[in-house]
Length: 181
Image (tube, rainbow, N blue to C red; front, side):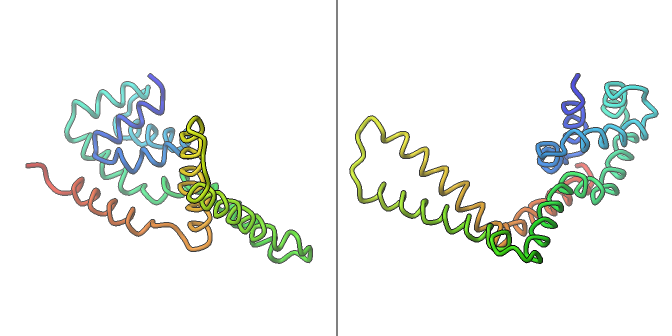
């Protein structure tokens, strides 16, 4: 069985599958999966990831211990999953401290260019005539511009809606920690 599948199966056992699924789905997913499996092997003393998964499935005490260790390592796993974003932030800080005016302004010029293109496209789609054969292509491009380009720029400059995500995670964590009925 693939390590990512095993890690996701372990996360599902303790009710953290949504959160760990997001972590595993990121750029550092393999490292997160390795860490989850390492925690499972630490709990079970299992020699293989498959053996650790099977032991945790069968033994309630090991499942509870795994759950506690997973929650205790949440910060480490989060940093592992999202640590690659620090280099992009550091690059932007370095660019702003540079004497090169183009480097300082590139991110803003890039955003203005995409914004003008997006708003021009939206205006054309709204008020222009689109051939019947191209309507689906126009819809796909419009969805890309609204859902990816503009949303990404707003997320970069104004922050993301991670507050809602944290609220959902808190509710999920409460469900995991509450005793089974």
